[in-house]
Image (tube, rainbow, N blue to C red; front, side):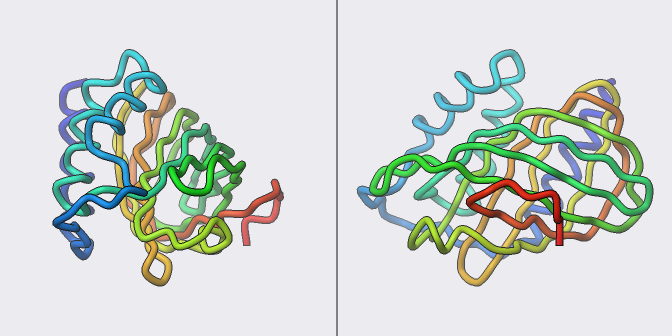
Length: 189
């Protein structure tokens, strides 16, 4: 179990280290502070919150303060090719809360299935409408029973940093995208 946790943490750190830095030096009134995000993570994730707090701290160190975040749940499965479906609520300080749905394909060395809770830190969000679209990235995961993971997705200047807790069995590295929409759809493309 420790080996799986260590592998998951290593994959998350490699992915974060490869992504471009967008950290901002000053707080803006529409951004969230580290303490606010850790508190939201504690309330949302519960018992896995220590690992989640460390993951959120890594994201803040690399990218700075987000101006939005999504809390939701998702399920995914893969056997070389994979699919992910999820739903949640986008929280912002300046334009309120909005429902958001995501779905997407992936391909790579990726096997297993999982379901769990997701917190997506959102950076450089200009408007709710600009959130909707496809975000590409590389994802890696390694866990049996449960795990915490993070990776980075990018579309134009908007960054999504999904922090996931999962229950299931998953091992692999894949390339894919998530498509965020205002309404649910079964079409991942």
